[in-house]
Image (cartoon, rainbow, N blue to C red):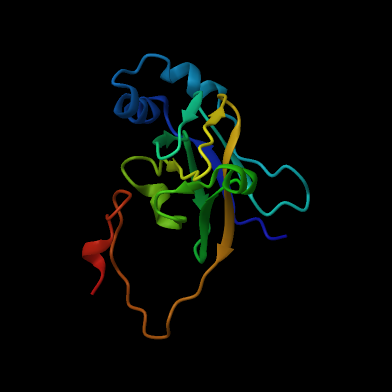
Length: 171
């Protein structure tokens, strides 16, 4: 296997900003960041790197949560990190990512938010099941995959941010 990336934690300051956005204060942010493990594969045959929750999460059907993972990824050019819900949670609860698949580009690492990966999930259960997970439980998985470009590609935009930050660069 080719090694194409490295996971790191974002700085305590950056994580606290994401935490405050969700909880309204920074209380508990430092402890949560310290408990978050770097994503890892569960078995030698696993494609996905498991992302862990930084806090307890309970989602009734139809409820959504924005999760600051505390993680960033330094990725080689020509590769992308795709984020999906854990298969079992999707199967049991119809846990969905709000953007269907998270796309973490290699240049996101250099953004002013340190490339902090946020994952927004919804319990889309149509069976009335409430999802209950504890801090530290794995809820999403990331898979690295190569990508190609067209012969006439002339992209020269520079990213500084996450969602929608490259829309102005598209011609």
